[in-house]
Length: 160
Image (tube, rainbow, N blue to C red):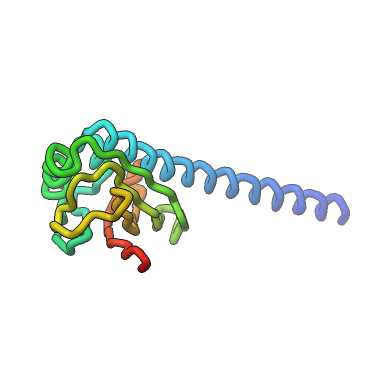
């Protein structure tokens, strides 16, 4: 009886450690994609920035423009990184990362773009030249690869 109890306890601990290690691996993969987005942006590499975009990504920018579909999403990234955002740098801080299932992750990001000279909408620049937005990305794992299925970016209004 005691041997069975010990065996069950050991099995439960081993399964718990395995699940924890799997979650750490999934989280590390998502964090690596977000970090690579920053690196790609800073290098002005729109192709690399959108490499994790799913073919049918649902994407909206801060002005509400629909950039859905990988081709449209990537075209827009190339356009802005070669134009109005050329030479800017990005800072992304993950505020919250949660797994809805083992294969679906929602990532809430505090996003900043530094060294702006103008805004795409023509709105006035912040006094420090930093654009601040809240970005939500949804990732789905398919065939062992995490793909960005949704990209929703909204402006953060500065307090007066």
